[in-house]
Amino acid sequence: KHSKKSHKEGRGSFSGRIGYVLAVAGSAVGLGNIWRFPYLAAKYGGGIFLLVYLLLTVSFGYVLIMSETALGRMTKKSPVGAFASFGNSFPFKLGGWLNAVIPILIVPYYSTIGGWVIKYLAEYLKGNVQEVAQDGYFTGFITDSFQTELWFLVFAVLIFIIILGGVRNGVERMSKIMMPILVLLAIVVTIYSVTRPGALAGVKYFLIPNMKNFSFMTIVAAMGQMFYSLSIAMGILYTYGSYTDKDMDLEQSTTQIEIFDTGIAILAGLMIIPAVFSFSGGNPENLQAGPSLMFITLPKVFASMGIGTAAGILFFVLVLLAALTSAVSLMETCVSTFADEFHWSRKKCCVFMAVVMIVLGSASSMGYGALDFIQIFGMAFLDFFDFLTNSVMMPLAALATCFLILRVVGFKKISEEIEQSSSFRRKKLYTVFLKYFAPICLIIILCSSIANVLG
Ligand code: PFF
Image 1 (tube, rainbow, N blue to C red):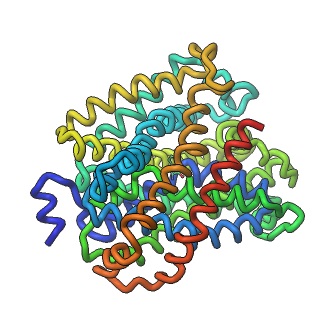
Image 2 (image 1 turned 90 degrees about the vertical axis):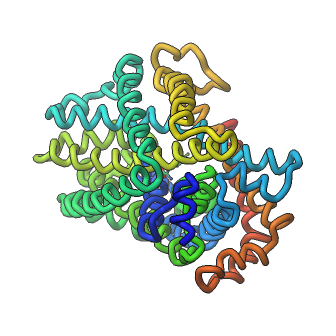
Image 3 (image 1 turned 180 degrees about the vertical axis):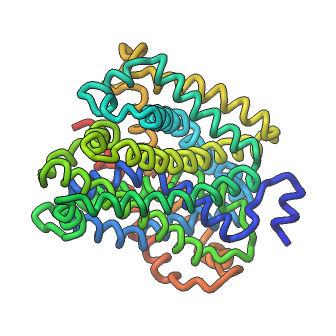
């Protein structure tokens, strides 16, 4: 079987479909699901946002996941090698490296936030449920560069330990252990949250469509979120696709990954929105807090609960698992690119990435404290890297993938790749979407998110 062969040749591979689905789900389910999705849903119309999001996931999201995974599996390479398999000229190099550089830029700042999560977890474990809920606690913490750097390093060390284990013993094994725990925790916390007094109003607010809030921005925000949440355009799906067998059913796996990711996002909404409603006596204003929801609003909610310490521990363990599996997928993609392109050993790739992490990650983690005099376009390092990757580079990287298929690879080869393992049931949808909608959607995302930041 192919997996055994490539395993022997030194290129990693997943042991089968379950390992693959859990690893991709681990990548997809991350900070994006837990804090980004709930506040966007609350802001852009509740149920109507959810509906638009679901429609986009099964169409646009499906097309991009299938494209990247099929290209990865076809070429058995991470993004740079995958693009290079079809041509050697500059556009192919640019397309490949654009996809490959994104995880290198994201993983340092993602790990900074991962460090914040460990810090909060540590405080809850110490029983400091009231302290972390105090006004100014979060600001005090992120401006204390010694603290943020320390916790960032703890998170980074955890990632490297898993990555050094390899694809099967590291990435796959971690996903198989952590993802079921994550689902269980999500269900427990959700049940607790929706049964708080006054929580039902929050459930309604989240699930029932409110046309008053519907606008063009609902679609744009849902589109951006879907992109972010499904780990599209970060080289990850090329890389994980390259670790799969020719006989693995890509279409079925993609469907399962989408259900997993969307399911956890909905649970996160049910976890956070009703709890905040219950806490604030039905006032949804607290939900508009945006990114600070998780580190400022929720700790206040926990502090007001009888079992706030336990709730805080369960919640932050859940967030930590989600963040770790996502960060590992980003790091694995970086390692895979260097191994493919420069034929470095896994260890050497890790040493190189450790240097990148220390430079860029420290910049991010000290960006609100010791380094706050440095601003790029008025943004701290972390916000700048987030903007650069998510708003500018990722839509361009996805456009590169679309053009690669439309202009060079062709639908025939992609269908053959997919049909090796199963029927290609959504072929019509795939073709129409890739040809007409995907490029337009990507250009809209690009323009709107740049306008958002500049305006
Ligand atoms: N898809 C993951 C999440 O939703 O958190 C991981 C991720 C998203 C990583 C976006 C990086 C990123 F820019």
